[in-house]
Amino acid sequence: MDRCVVLVDAGYLLGAAASLLAGEPARSRITVDHAALILGLRERAEADTQQPLLRIYWFDGAPDRVPQPEHRRLRVMPRVTVRLGALTRSDGRWAQKGVDAAMHAELTELARNRACSDVVLVTGDGDLLPGLMSAKEHGVAVHLWAVQAADGDYNQSEDLVAEADERRVLDRAWITKAVRAKDTGPSCAHNAHPDRPAQPANATLRWSSDKGWVERGGPLGEPPETASLPTLAQLTSAEQRWADREEDITTVGGDPFEVGQVFARRWMERLPETVHLQKLSTMYPRIPHRIDGELLRYAARFGLLAHKDDQIDEHDRYAIRAGFWREIDVRAAAEHVPAGE
Image 1: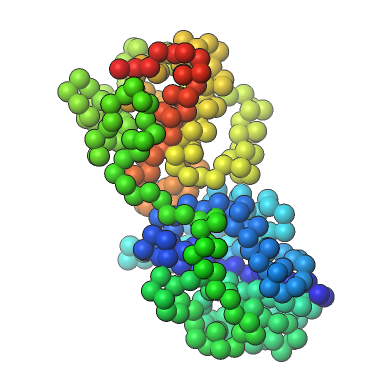
Image 2: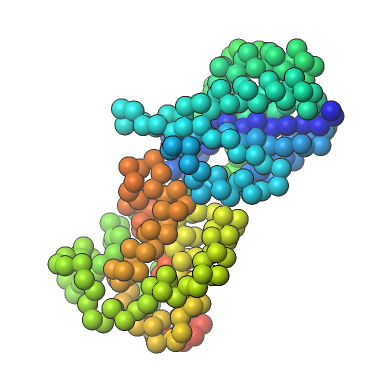
C-alpha cells in the first residue's frame, strides 16, 4: 500500500528534545504542545516519503501502563494510536519496559501485512535493528529520524543509522515549533498584578503574613473569613464535570501556569455572585487552603506529579499559583473588583 506510517519512541523523542533545549534528558524540564507535535510529524512524514499518512503510533511508558493525561490527549487525536509499556523506578531513576518490544512487533506486523510502503522510525535504540531489517526484507522503505543531539554527536545506534534507507535530523528549529524548555527562573513576577509588590525569589504563592512571606502554620482548618468561599467541586454540576474532562483531554496543554489559569477561570465563571471574587482578590497572595489543595489535585491530572515521587516541585507549584492569580487579576480588573494590598 502506498502510504506511510510513523512509529515514535516518545522516550527518545522527548528525552532528546529536553537534552537539546534544557540541557538534561528529564521530560519534566520541557513543555510539549502535543497537537502541534503530531501535526509536525505528519507533515514532515508526508513530505519526506511523498506518501499519505496512514497512522502515527506513539510508544511510551506509564506507571502500571495506566494512561497519563498526555496519553489521553494523544489517543483522541486523528490518526494517532498510543501503545504503552511499563514505567518502573529503580535506584532513583525511571526506566521504560516493553516499549522496544512493542515497537518491534508493530513494525514487523505492518511490513508483513504490507500495510504501508514507507515507515518512519523516530528512535535511537539499536534493539529495533532486527525489526528494521525485517521491514526492509518485506519491501518497506525505512526512514530513520533523529533529534538533533545537544553535543553535536549521534544520539542513535550507529547500526540503525547504517541500516536505514533514509535518515533525517529534526533540528532545533523544528523541535521548538512544539517543544520548549520550562522557564527555570526564580520567579514569575512579570505575571503579577501591577499594583502588587513583586515576590521574593523563593516565594511559593502559598501563605503570607504581616511579617512577610512565610509558610502557613497552625491547624489546617480554614479561618472564618475564607470558610465561606466555595470550592470548584461545589460549583460544578455533573454535566460541567464531564465537559471539563473533555476540555482537559483535548485542549489543555498541561503547562503549570496554564493549569492554574484554567482552574481559576472555571471557578470564577461558576460563582453565583461576585462578592466571592472580591473577597478572594483581597487575599493575595494567600490562596485559601481548601481551594489551594483542590488546585494542586487538579494539576496532578496533567502529569505534574509524574517522575517526581508524587510531589509537585517548587517551581511548578509557583507557576500553578501564578497562573491562578493571573486569571483572577484579569477578571477582577474587568469587573472593577478592588485589588488586594
